[in-house]
Length: 251
Image 1: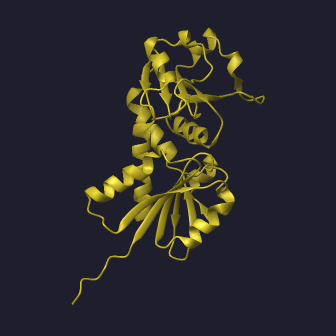
Image 2: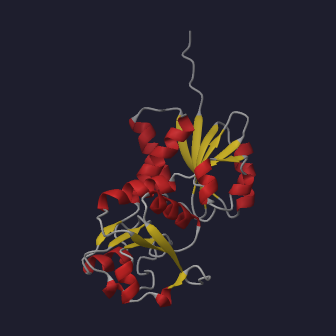
Image 3: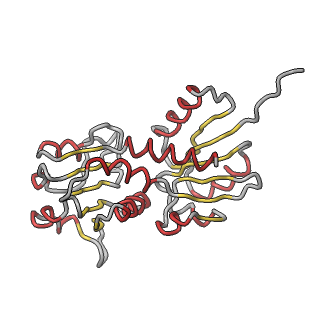
């Protein structure tokens, strides 16, 4: 009897201008290593979120998706259901697709961030500034909350509950000793860019965490490190959240 072919399983990443993406290489390397010959991970580079339904109905064997900038919030109205955490966070980076094409959204960003940050924490690290207010910042805020760390958002156009970049001074920096960049500033190819901060305010008591992972050391991290800060890029967070996504797709 001829050997029965395994059913093709497809996974992918939704985003915009994502040719650089970590996820596609990470998962395809994983499939090769584990000899999952029937699995493939592809990029769905969309000009607009409105193209999303086409992806679902035209892609055979699609089981799971990751979602990246700028669609982590925009994608929500297209989903049938949200996990409790995704609902609380208001941002989705993982989608599970049922056999009946029902879509459930999850957030694994907060899990990846929390797991990557935790080993760096010392007793005095109890307040954080989150640079940026997009979808990624929401997962970071939820992760900090789970670690019992207070946080505030920093924005270029702050509302009454946020801090403006121009307001960040030595006093604030003494109070907040974790600085997290959730903006895409400094991502390849724009490696000469960094969030608008006075980097001389960083000390050896600070943690500078950048969600950007390409380049490995952004200008934000480089400048913070020059002042003695502990630094970490977003690579490990991505690995943790990717593995969590894999668990969700396979449960």
